[in-house]
Image 1 (tube, one colour):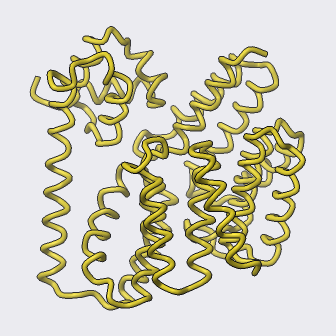
Image 2: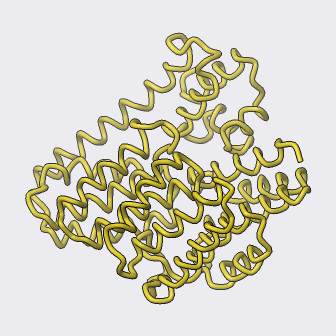
Length: 360
């Protein structure tokens, strides 16, 4: 038992949780978990924490499970330290270099999994925080912290996404750029609302973004879309659709030509946001939004194709085909390589499972 996966297996078996049950509760595929437990795939920090969330109450954390986590954390910390010192030895980066690096992260977010992006981005943030003597760098930090928040769980309060988003908003305020201030709040609000996580925080951030400026920008677009999702969760379909129409009007003015960046909202991505909302509402327009997203999305973004398939599974489950909808969603996620999975996809699958389990 000389690898993390073996310790995870011991913890799972000690809690009398089957591999099938663990896959359902963590939203990783059964085959991926099996490979991790056998040592054929690495146990990422995200996966270890998923085991801990499932088994923490059933297993003596000081006895078995925490041993696995401690094998992951020191490596991550060591990499951060080494990256920070290496950067200091090379000298400070110019502002333009940081801006270019941020743009690269915006592109990488669209194709890389959360675990792959998270560590590298955290390392650069460690370096950047030592160089914040220019307002433009506060703006770069604000955007990067927003992206970093999207790689963290949205359901663990100050330890995860929420704290990152709050700090991003403060950093944006310090940069003094109104457009960045609106974008950070709007993007964070939509990330939470899309996942159905911390809706009061999503509503607050979206309200702040809308209040800051009425100019048609990407930040306002994402804030209005977030408000539409929050209204949908609250059962207010009329307000939800009205906010979506407001967002669409902003998109007609401010939509992006750039196709692959988290800092952009081209046509295919707006249709993806729209598809999720309309699927939640059970609205017939969802089908057209899904078809438009598939038609306009670059072929190099399979993760976002999986989003649309999960939306379809959600609609099937909500329409009464619980087994078919859940099977459709699980098969769609299984077709995507595990390293391309995101927290959003896992939370979407969990939403399909909740709808499937709810009485009709």
